[in-house]
Length: 358
Ligand code: C2E
Ligand code: MG
Ligand code: MG
Image 1 (cartoon, rainbow, N blue to C red):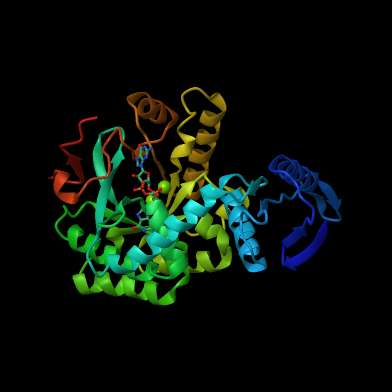
Image 2 (tube, rainbow, N blue to C red):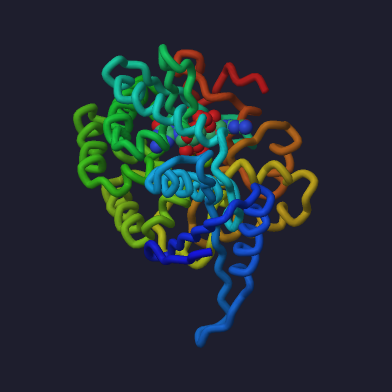
């Protein structure tokens, strides 16, 4: 093999004799396992991990550029599926690339053709069943592709730069809806990594609420843990500024990424949203319950509220209440729906969602 360093922490390996998929897999395993062995530095014990992406000639491509591109794609898949693993580029990935480029093309027209809309999911006090706020969730029906999940199209929009237009378009829609809601309800709106980095987008968000005369305290921005981790210093500056402007900040999908206690105290946020993957094992797993209790103590020490996402059953709801968690969200209470399908009735300080029939 020929080994080369091609970037900061990226290395390339050229294997110039014919090898089978199983041999490549074995090699990938050896490399990733070897790099997982902890080593000692002056500052202490360090453990790193590496992921591998392989592209095999001629199946994956005919030119050097093609092969490098596809190896990169496989690497990206390895990183997003399971860090520290290795992935070989196959036809499945070729189909994925095609699908992504179709999404890319159709997405360019989506804002102009008004194909995007907003659904809302209630954020509920699990004890009383009352709705405290509504999370806006983007929905896209493309005449060409049908329904496309936000997980798929937001990632593409981030890559192509259309995300700013989409964010501002959806935010304005949501703010217009909010004007008709009972005043005790807040809007929770997801921001992407790109939005957090983009000064103009942030200024425009503020401009939109000013134009519509909506106070910033009725808006919560959700920023994922992974986004925050991308650039901790910048993100914490942004969240601080947004808080100074009166917005609330939620740390979204907590527990799905790095979840490190070493950064959490550096961040300015008002609400911690625990990822739904956490809830999956809660009923059977005492340790998950212990971790959840610890997170609740952490939130109370930091004086931030805590919301658990993905509550689907009455058993999960009851257990969460017993563990001391009251703010919840999930199919048990209501699936995301168009605003006119959510029957919101005002009741002084809280709002009851009358059509939520669990
Ligand atoms: P998220 O912000 O964590 O939103 C929660 C996701 O979990 C939503 O998926 C929601 O439909 C789903 N969900 C809620 N309750 C349950 C439950 O009880 N069980 C299960 N299995 N799922 C539940 P959705 O709408 O597909 O959105 C996926 C992700 O896409 C969101 O995760 C958010 O990160 C992103 N997203 C959605 N809309 C926007 C947007 O307007 N802008 C940005 N930047 N991202 C968005
Ligand atoms: Mg969210
Ligand atoms: Mg979430």
